[in-house]
Length: 623
Image 1 (spheres, helix red, strand yellow):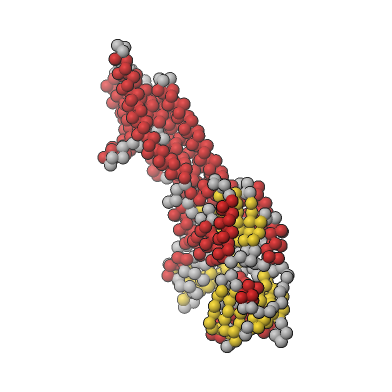
Image 2 (tube, one colour; image 1 turned 30 degrees about the horizontal axis):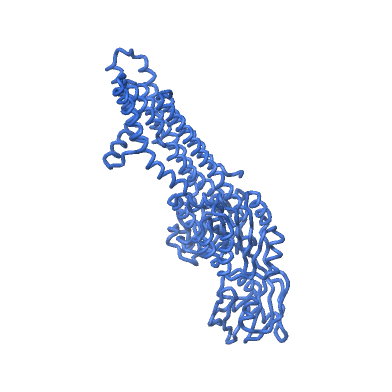
């Protein structure tokens, strides 16, 4: 508990003790009893009374503070001192529970926020100087000592260490990192000294993106939250006027009919009606359920950008996925070099590597890695990237084209087609076919299990979209057990395929697209729910997505769906429970069967139960 909560608990205990003690004051001593009961009432309720008064001044009258103030003051005016104070006392107990629950959710977010590094070490004159991470430029050499956080994304130049990535990915097992490995900011160096060359500015690094996503998540409300907000704005004034009608109409009718009016009895019923009607349970527990759900998901390495996306995730029935970097590792290796007559293996590989030297695409990286020599980019001019086809460039005055069969067809070249599984890079030199290079990608270890988990989670159809050749795509889809596969697609074709599937699904069903590359950004934006791979994914994909998987693990897709469904189940449980109990108690209160103690349960008791149920959304570890 924080200091504020401890003070609230002390006030509750003092007030409860005084209320119990004052019950022994004789009924005849009305003034003494009134003064005595006002002490615990003001101790426990002064903040609620102040808020109600401020609400009236701001013309925002109808809220829970106003209802509590009217109900308790009314009960005291009728001489029911103990009941009036008890209503305020139990209301504050409910507020304390709510504060604790929200605090628990916020602590989970705060733990995530703790990944923000306070400094970066830069080596100057043989000593380490601590600087603000914002001041470190791209390409700088930073030093991360044991126990420190990696402040900025980069590549390890020297050293090896175990990295704790739990705050980012939810993975409890440390990751081993060595020279040449890419590391993301927010990881904790458990042992070893690392020298890292930064590849991004701090503002663009992984840790900054995570913090920004989580901080902005609460601003995007779900349909359920918006409904509850609108419901409360209409519901509260309606019950206030209903209570007023209950206090006045029956006794007036009695007077007209010549019977005793009994205003005291009907005013008491109206006050009971007011206490029962307070919508605290709904107004507090529904946003808290989503807040806890987002917090629980973030601990598991699933960042949801808003509660609206969490709600949509629960209705996902179609999952459409990119192949490279999503279902496969995106780690390509050259497995075959097949030059045409008159061209050597080394020459073919050299021209291909130089032509692709300005690209960071995994295919380009594998060509450069296989070439294995330092590339002088000054030798490369007039680079032209042709989307969905390949690249053209002038290397040492020689025109080189590297790409897929579509590029060869567009150049109207006769070429030898390769039918082997893998990514085929056809090479043309001076508008003549020079051979092909076969590059193979590897499936992620848990991709097959991820597809099974999605189907177990209720996903009706799993689909893969890829720009790769049909033979490669069919082989991957068959191995993973996917329902459908579409190959040899351009970025625009992926959008078209997603739109075709969107047209087939039912209105309440949602489609999720999972991708990681720049070319996936348009599809991520078009899908109902866009899911991006956060570790290896491009900035454009992460920006366009609604959900980010921090460790690029496809198994987290099913996990995210399960988390969202648990959250929505708790939301619906709270809505049905709160409204059901209140409706029953409202009828009983209007009929005079339910007294103020029943009203206290209908308000505070229901709120406490709903809040405790809502924070169960934090527990997502074993889903």
